[in-house]
View 1: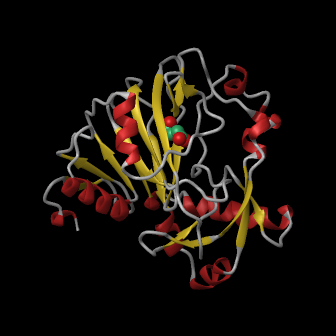
View 2: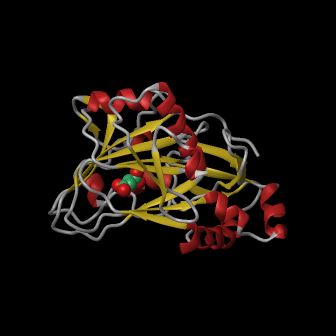
Length: 283
Ligand code: SIN
């Protein structure tokens, strides 16, 4: 529980998931502190840090303590550090990136373990990110639904999300998203995974990338997928993070969804995202 931590302060932000971690400078984390941050990450699924001052190299160095970096194929990279993806919305832009519930890179055969998002510039108000616990979503289903989903796999794809069908999006035209020719990934994963680190069961479908259940048509799949998307976004499974410049959110892609609010037109928001390699998922 939160009181077992001795090197860091841990303040849960909702009953379902999320904790703000205090007493840490991410540029300078000793092994004992790192091991407590890891425990908090697994306990809370998304962890938040405030008032961090990290250069891109320091952001990369912290990320590499967790895993190798998984370079996003579609987001505009930071020119000086192409392993960092930029998530930007300028005052004159209307689209933002990530304003639907999703988990990152589920279209990959070996999906990303997590993402570390660092706020460089934030609006005065708005631009919050919401997270939802896919452990809680799974646990909130009936035993009958759990049993049925436990026997299913689903297909995930990047084609409809980042391919040529997105040519008309503002974020494609202005270059925040690119490389539609690389949107060729299709992958299959269990609908309910055993989390590779915690062993806890987690619902692993998401509205951005899941296209159908294996062995089912798209038409047969969509009503049940829609039910699961509505269920997974229930407020009691979620938390909401209000950013400040220097804030960091580090989420577990195998245990959460996230959703970036697009409610700050006319203001600028700039985030740096590093995504981390994961492992193959199993039921
Ligand atoms: C994302 O989906 O990775 C972006 C999240 C955010 O900008 O809050």
